[in-house]
Every structure is written in structure tokens, then in C-alpha cells.
Image 1 (spheres, rainbow, N blue to C red):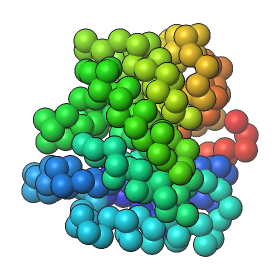
Image 2 (image 1 turned 90 degrees about the vertical axis):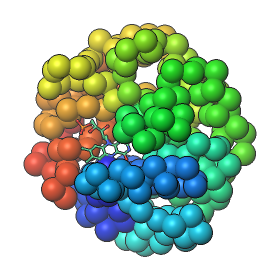
Image 3 (image 1 turned 60 degrees about the vertical axis):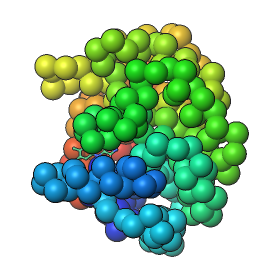
Image 4 (image 1 turned 90 degrees about the horizontal axis):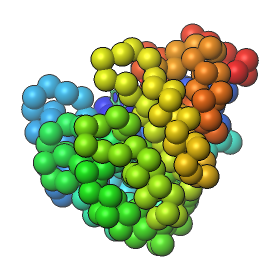
Length: 236
Ligand SMILES: Cc1cc2nc3c(=O)[nH]c(=O)nc-3n(C[C@H](O)[C@H](O)[C@H](O)COP(=O)(O)O)c2cc1C
């Protein structure tokens, strides 16, 4: 969660039984950093790092977690170019770089980044493939489901075909306060990639439902937004 999930936040969350924590999202190239500045100006929290400090900051934040915990650290990244993501994959403390094809803030989508990647499967494929080819960490791609004029299965297959290790799906169902489990089921039926199901997981039942729908793993954000978790992950 941009502006919230830094090293100290994730270090605290690592005690709740997760096997991966995700820092970021971070804006890491000129265009996304400028976009982030505009987002901050209209009052929405963002991490704001100068371009020249991006690598050292992400190294510092991931070290805070790695120095205290054995699990994996993922970093959610917004970039208009693949190479800055590859650079971050070289940080020793980073296990997974996550391409953000999910952000819907207009300042980000207007520069062809975040969710805008989903409107152009070819661009998503080429972008992901370039990162996969040179990355020294595992590669995840986070997508948002049920976007108008976007075929959930097509973009999922594109991520798989480009060679990503993980497909992270925000199974958002517009107008509902629960995840679209059908979309998870359909993606699972049509791909073999490790599928992380996300959206509205707030207790043992909603986590189990996501796994029963076909997800190989789950992730959650808002249920932990206050820096604690009200349920026990070991019971899932
Ligand atoms: C304040 C806030 C900031 C977020 N920032 C990011 C982000 O930077 N990158 C990202 O991929 N998702 C971001 N998300 C989306 C969440 O990671 C998650 O996909 C979404 O909230 C649905 O999952 P949940 O129901 O468990 O919260 C953000 C969500 C919130 C509430």
C-alpha cells in the first residue's frame, strides 16, 4: 500500500505468519515519480523518493525486514520502463520484483503505467518479458480483474507466456465488497502460473474461500492497514 507499507510496517507484519511481505508501491522512474508528486499534491499518500535515491532507499527498507526475518521480500513497482525494475531486482535483499499493472490513479495510467498496461496486452507481454529476461529476482505481475474492455483470461495468459513467476490478481468485483471468486476460478482453469488471490480477505473464511477457488496463495492489504491482523494465518 503506497505511503504505508515500508520496511518497518512489513517487519511488524512478518510476525503474523506470512511467508512474503510486499513493500511499496514505489514510483521508480522520472515519469512515475513526477506522477506520484501530483498524486501527493491532491492529498493521496505516496512514497516519494528522488530518482537518485530509489535503489538505496529500497535496499534500506528491505534490509530492515531481512535483518529481522527469514521470509521473502517483494517490492511493488511502478515504472514506465522495464530497466529500472531490473536494477531493483539486483538488490540482494529483494526476492521478488512486482510489476504494478494495477494502479488506477489517473496520473499513473495517463503515462501508460499501472492498470493502463492491461489495455495493451502486447505492451504488457513485452514489458514483462524484458523484466523476466534480465531480472535477478523472481518476477510477479499484479493485475486488477474486471476492468471494462479488458479480458481477464487474455491478460493472465500474457503474464504467464511472458515468463513471470507469479500472477497476483486483485479480484475486485465492482459494486461489491467481496472478491470475485469466479474470476480466480476461471484464471486457474486457463493458466498454470502460481496464482496469488487478493481482495477483501479479512478472516479465515475469506482466505479459505480464495484458496478453494483455485488461488495458490493469498494476499491482503486493507485488513492489515492499521499494522495488525485480527486473525491467525496458521488456521487457514
Ligand atoms: C491505501 C492503499 C494503497 C494501495 N497502494 C497500492 C500500491 O501501491 N500497489 C498495489 O499494487 N496495490 C495497492 N493497493 C491495493 C491493495 O494492495 C489491494 O490490492 C486492494 O486493496 C485489495 O485488497 P484488500 O481487499 O486486501 O485491501 C493499495 C490499497 C490501499 C487501500
